[in-house]
Length: 442
Image 1 (cartoon, one colour):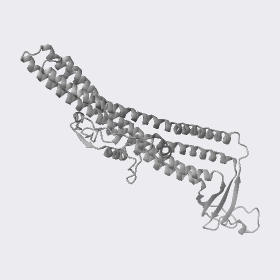
Image 2 (cartoon, one colour; image 1 turned 180 degrees about the vertical axis):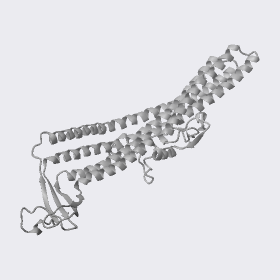
Image 3 (cartoon, helix red, strand yellow; image 1 turned 90 degrees about the vertical axis):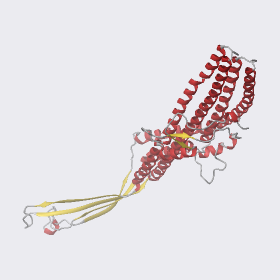
Image 4 (cartoon, helix red, strand yellow; image 1 turned 60 degrees about the horizontal axis):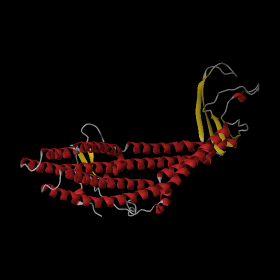
């Protein structure tokens, strides 16, 4: 069913001298590119990649290289004078067995996945915010245009009443009532204009636009009409449970808590490291105590190298590991309960939205029918008023009914737009690809 021609609203910008037209797709694209919260989430993803390297370093080999230099002086073994010396040493260790290494590797991977899903959650939230602000701006502008059209109609009635008053066909009270009826719309239009400005500002913030002096605010453009949808919540539950970013994030938090628990529990298991150590002396003539050997050559210090393995195992816990394990288990179980709540709420939320669509559709169709009747009633009252068969009160009542009905139609259109946005959010359809949009775009 089409909207009556009389209530098709012009989408020309109002209230701002500096503005730039923007469609919904362009607004969402700019929000994805410039929104501060999305940019911050992207930086968090980069930080998670670096954190994964740190987590994996527990399995990497570790090395230490150093040197010692100095001067040896005095008289010993028939030598005299000062002799400079220098030696270098190095230590290399490689973990051979540590129970926490596999969990640490998985934890690093999960950390990156969590950061990715946090970015997705931020994207969904900010795109949804921009979309609602876009619809609200269109709605407020449509209301303002409707009010202005109605005011022009009432101003024409004032001119007619003034002509009749000058011709002595009506009393001054009728002219005053006509003027009051027109002026009643002024504060309502001013309020809608203010609300429109707030919506545009919210849209600009969601888009990440500059808001300094001289900045051009966005001016939403696009169709603002009713789109009848036949949506079934039963067909969307599986898709929502699979693709919603917040549910994916909740599952990853559970995986993260599970891996953290395993890392802490690794303290109950032994650790084996392989090690190599050595001392290199690039010059000779450096001496040490030989324990009283009669051979002077036994006093000379030579290069040394050694290799082996170290074995450590915590035997006494005293709650240090056990308490940490219990805390991680509690965190995991808490996340599991939250996930169960979220998953259980999905069918209920979709069913409520479907009922909302049906109620809005029924109200819209009823209002469109009522608007046709109200329009005809206004025409009849105007004709009767011209022949003196209707009072100014009848005209006022007819005009008020028509305005209320038209405002109701616009409200129904806006509520349906908001419900469609909520449906896309609830079903996880904000991430759509160009080659797979036929059944997704609402």
